[in-house]
Length: 261
Image 1: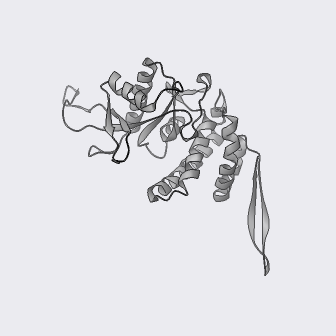
Image 2: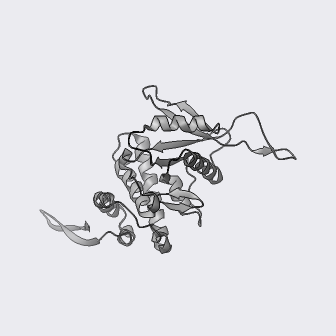
Image 3: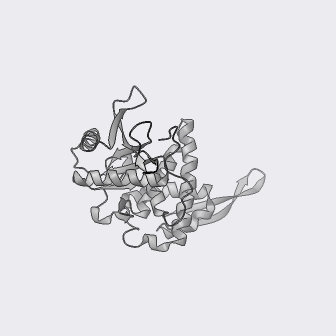
């Protein structure tokens, strides 16, 4: 969340994620990060091209548990979190925020006890929401002591977000789809230069997600043909060839024929 204090830094994002994960572990909830914060963690050995605005966490709760109850439990278990109403009065849910510690000031480097402070929005989701998978605990990857979706699962979830937002009626969602596309290209370039990210479970992905992603991958390659090789490295059988476009005047431009298996 951006405030008069400026945007969140990557260190503050990591701090928010660490405290949230620790709190969930104390409450006996396994979890994993996905979204932009998880993308940035995979790129921690290099500079990620932007700082996330919030963190997204999937909580592996029991099927009968409600996400609003989990947010309430987190807020009640630690004063480092606060629940606030949604900005839209039509929404009945509340939004969870992590209260970023105030900066240290003065010669003794003491933290301020008053004044404005930054807050980091914490999106808590359950498996099944937005087709998020229930990843087996042993398959969750760990980066700087934080649980993260395996790389292939992460990039396909990012691809799904791009696929959905690109046709959204809301202008801000379509703008986010362009940012998603940039993120995806960065991740594809990263995996081609860091093949070991697919080791140790990084290649894990539910077969249902892989199957559904074929159409998303095909559409993405149509817009960014140079990424075809990287998708092949991620386990998709890619065939890209040119075919002539026929019209009443005969053969005109060339079209790309893309098959993804």
